[in-house]
Length: 327
Ligand code: GDP
Image (cartoon, rainbow, N blue to C red; front, side):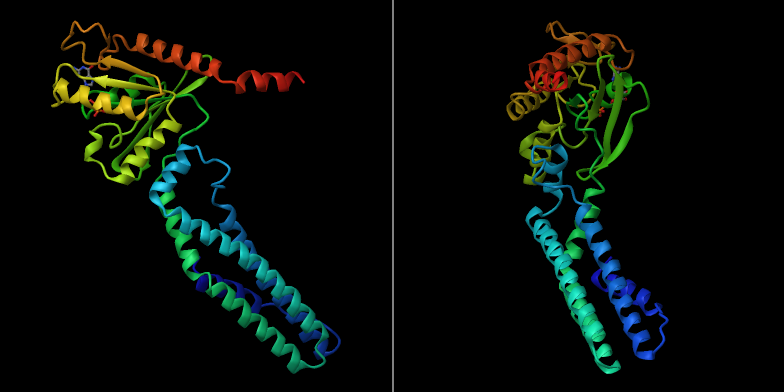
């Protein structure tokens, strides 16, 4: 909600509150205390909810999601907004406490009324000061909604290669169920997320149109950052080549992009595979497959599994976690 909508909601709701008491003075006093407390509840609950809705940026800095969030919003502005909302929550509580006391101690109807009105006024000005912050948070929320929901804990294969080399066909071929298409801030096509059960773990396989499918020199800074965000996600990259060149890209161009990707993701294992083996088979000695007929796909998946298992075993956190379990 905007600051105005918030105030509207809070004060409209409290206007309906009524109380009973023996004297008029007591009745107004009770009513005023309830109204202050209800308005504070409505406002604080909403602000707290907005505040908690943003994942802690500090907790997980090395994450695909956080990296992508940085590309679609101004993180410093968002942090500033969050801290201002945090400040406002504290300030509202102070006002509630002070004006509740003022109402309880007021000697007559006028003074009760004054205290209540002053509470409304000061609370409104706190909320109005959040106007641009709430707008910044709403804008960030809209941007985040376009970030695909991928499982960062699941072993992940990321597919790369020029358009039309057969990446999407490969994702469909490997996945047990129909791949989901998630919206993505950098492409109208959306990324394709497939999954399969490798026995040892469930594995995620992702095609990212718009990211790993054209030369890096054609990209702006934000796209480059998004490309690099993939390093937090990918356990293995499968680079698909199309030696038939029916995709419209020469092998020279395809190998150039491959070099760039190797440069950008140096420490992530990369499997090179030639697709469309049903059309043409080169004598390069590289892995071969046909995503269309399925030939060679099983061997490719086995190779990816072999690498991922090796990587996982190499991670120190595994034995540590086991040791803790035994404790
Ligand atoms: P992407 O843009 O890299 O995801 O490519 P697609 O998976 O959309 O495939 C592009 C075109 O190539 C489609 O018409 C596919 O049917 C075709 N294609 C993909 N794999 C093969 C293959 O192994 N053999 C042949 N003959 N065609 C393929």
